[in-house]
Length: 523
Image 1 (cartoon, one colour):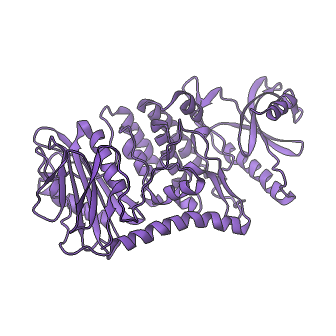
Image 2 (cartoon, rainbow, N blue to C red; image 1 turned 135 degrees about the vertical axis):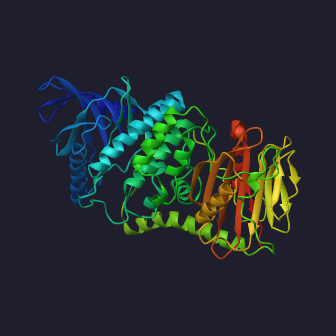
Image 3 (spheres, helix red, strand yellow; image 1 turned 90 degrees about the horizontal axis):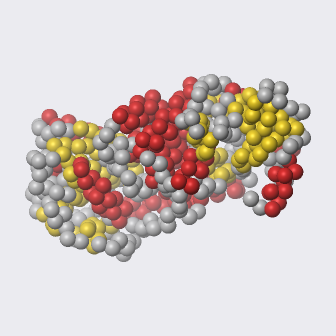
């Protein structure tokens, strides 16, 4: 805290607010207000009192809007009665500024825990997730959206209670909006893609933020954080989340919550059910969805679910991919440009240090024929016929296939990678996976099949679908992931990797390198 800030705290300490609440200690602050521990002598209890800031230079109309927003926050939260939501006791005015009097919960925020202690255990993440989804279900049932779900707004009390707080920008779904046209409100790392595109907030946006919060709780870093707000906005709108280092029972749920299309995210009810299942699961959790590869000594079935690519010369895929990438960048930048040009406020509340550290942005460029730099221990295998450069771990070998697919295995022949390119992309890649699954399962080609995830996504700006499952090999269980993508009417690609379930983490890291650094050369 600066000397000026310390002086302000000393000056305010002991003040009486609304002739009733005595300020004791400042316990939090943010862009919209300062939270104090206060004494309520009337009822003989301690409360949390949030004093709103008066932004410098704000005109009377804007200030009136801010104050009405604060009062609406109190009214919104007062509609919710739930142990996982902070209780609002009162709303008072002090020196012309509104103050919200809330339940005082002796606690640390999840953001504090991550900064001071590092990532939490899977069991703790499940417990926190349970509290958060129950709070959100209660809020949504009362017609209230939070709009700023993040680690700093999750209180973890000493008695085990998980409390969602600071509905400071909450909105009741049945009230008129006080947000100006073009105004985007929320914390950058937790804004859903549809919010960045200017769409209205809804329950799915809160669930996206829940997914980003759980990712950070387990990994210690944001799934989309970049060096600048624009870079973060681009990553959120068009890139997959960073591959997690820890593959747990929560990974498929988090990936589902971070799906770009809100219509494809699970409902709050499903989230709570899957959290309950994760809490009772002892098996290691999944990461990214896709089927099993050919060529493994123990696995024969995986090759069949993979769509057989048509033969022929490479088509003009790169220009389509470039347009998708530029379009995504333009979408992210346009949000900022529109806001600045219109004079409206773009409130990307600080990219708070809610994580343990900030990773460098090493996102490679795929629009150049110069391959992006690979990590140590990897090299590129180039196929001129398909126009692809595939990143592979050193020591991996090429295997023969009956079609034009590229197939590789690790030295032990247990981890298999397969890459295909076809002439015409499916109009609905998700339906393609559904059809392939039905045929493969009914034909007995995937013994012991258990689906982990099958859903739409995007890849480098192109429509895509991911499919992940486990199946039984001759001697052990395998896990597989497929990623299919392509522009309708253009070329279609599919990436496939399978590995023993017991060593899925190693296989998933290889898949992540292929997904992030695959080079598609101009045709």
